[in-house]
Each structure stands twice: as structure tokens, then as C-alpha cells.
Length: 268
Ligand code: KIV
Ligand code: NA
Image (tube, rainbow, N blue to C red):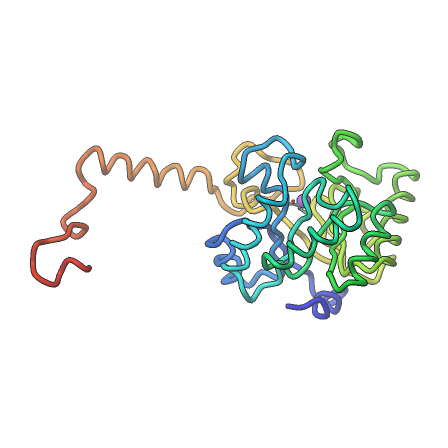
């Protein structure tokens, strides 16, 4: 996968993106042939247990990005720029974007529209591929609230202008988060780079879901836009219960799990 291929997929083949944060998960995602892995700052919520994405920083993101690239060396990996890593100054932003690439990402993602367009242009000028992210942007939830966007003409115009301005700045793709279906379709039809939706309806050029959400590991998280493909929480819980019961009953370890004092056999 490359930027060129991602651009070519628009209107030809839908793009399937998921998030991942660790080595083995990335390995599974690559084995499944996923188009793009996003190391999202949603790691703050699902990996660390914070209530929002404001709390995660560069240090944590770099560890997750490095782990994911180790597990999925042949998959296109996008690394989220965490809150405060691109807002303080242009030079800090470019340095942090570079660190995300050095950790193994093939591109960075950052939230915003017209406000970040000049910054995106600078990054792209320096050879840093950027994925945009508009609509509900979790890093600014304290200001914009947690709700879908594109519900009236003002919001629609704002979103279309946001998409246009970051397209012109040079993004190779844009995440549309929680945008009403007709507006997400309008954006998708009006720009030349692929849109990747989450809660943005059926007509985006691709879709993205968070690892713990679509695998049912994030037990009580059940927003309307989510489809669960596995009952992960219950399956893991049952396995742990079975192990615990086996330990207590003496069924584990069994005879095949123990080392025996025969010469040369202790390596198995
Ligand atoms: O952090 C994240 O997981 C994201 C996706 C929801 C697009 O930004
Ligand atoms: Na994110």
C-alpha cells in the first residue's frame, strides 16, 4: 500500500482501515490484509483507560506506533498526532510529525480544517504525508461537544470548507467522524482524495473502526455507528475463567506441560 494506491482507490474500491496499538494486534491486522492501520490517539481511552484523548502525549504514541510497525511492516500505518503536539508552534509540530515517521508511521493524522491548513501545507512541503480529520474532532470536545456534525446549513458549509481547505493543503485522505450521511456524501463527492468515515454513513470512500470497539472488547461502548464483529470481552473472560478454574482444580499444568528429569529433554 502506498499513497498513490490509496488515492487510486477512490471510487474504485472501498478502503478498510482499523486502529491497532500493539505488536500482535498489528500482526493479526496485517494477516487479515487490512488496507490501513491507524495508531489512533484513541489509545488514550482504550489502551490507558483515560476518559478522553487530551491526556495522551508523544511519548506514549511513539511506543504504540513503533510496536504496530514491528507487527505490520508491510501495511500502511498512520500515526495520530496527539493533543499539543501540533498546536503550539509550527516547528514543534513538524518535529513531532517527523518523530512519528521515525517511529515507523508512513503518515501522520491531525484534527482540524482551515485552522490547520497552513500547517498541513508546510508538512507536505517537507515530505510528511498527512491524513486530515474533520467533523467530530475528539481533541476539541470540550469546545464543540460530543455530537454529530452537519445537521444544519451552517455546519454543512463549515465542513465543506474544512475539507476543501485541507485538500488544497495537500492531505492524501480525510477521516470524517460523526457527520450526517448526506453531508459526508457531499464532501466525498466534492474532493479528489478519499474520505474514510466513522459514523459518517455509507457513502464515504472507506471506513474506520477502533480495535477494541469492533472486536467487542470495549464492553459497554455501543454507539449507533458501531458494528461488533466479535464478542471479545466475553470470550477473553471465559478463557481466563477456564484457566483460573484449571489452576484451582489442578487440571493445569497437566502431565504434557511439565519438564521431566530425562537427559536432553528439558529444552522442550
Ligand atoms: O484515534 C482514533 O482512533 C481515530 C479514529 C476514530 C479515526 O482518530
Ligand atoms: Na484520533
